[in-house]
Length: 265
Image 1 (spheres, helix red, strand yellow):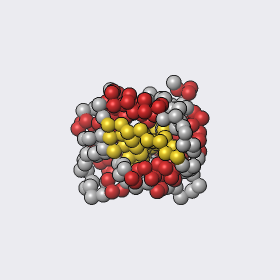
Image 2 (cartoon, helix red, strand yellow):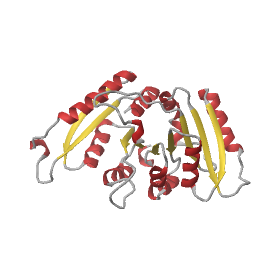
Image 3 (tube, helix red, strand yellow):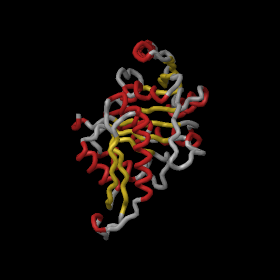
Image 4 (cartoon, one colour):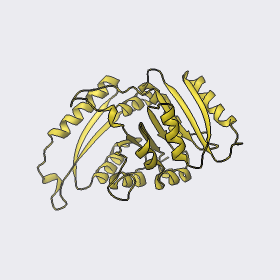
């Protein structure tokens, strides 16, 4: 919710906070009595965070047979630009993200962001108590030749969550003689635009996940941000095991960003 609020503040967005209450398939959602106490408390907490960030917040609870379907309906009805969801980082099935998230990654027309929080960042917080995030060290793995990254486009909003932001740009290559100038140019652009420290790093490794995890550990990064600038890269990231491998073994928070589908642009 705090990440959403930071993005909303930067982009002049409004926040639509949704909680879905599932009912059995045999029951009619509009006629099924449900308990709303937990949902109401959750939405009230979301409203408090929105007030703290001074962004408009709309809250809604939907009763539905299917969580993904309810979210897709809301995206269409409310003309949502960016969907932000929590991600546990593990699934009991063979799915990387789980059934609901998998469905939304494939079908949601807007940008999609998955957030996996390290449990150490939330441990000890009491229910109903808003505790501000402070993420200072950001790691952005970039592929070779990537001049425009959807993850980096969110950086101006992300630094609102930092007191002393530092950005590590990581490019993983298989050959040591790769051109380093493009990565340096991106770092210089970030320094000039945001007045923050941006460090370009090129690492030779056959395993992207291994290189990312190693860099996150060495630099004590607070969060790793994975994004895609083209649909081809998106397919490799989403359908492969890169996000799960990093999430399972990386000792920090993780954000995965999927661009809007071409038909929605």
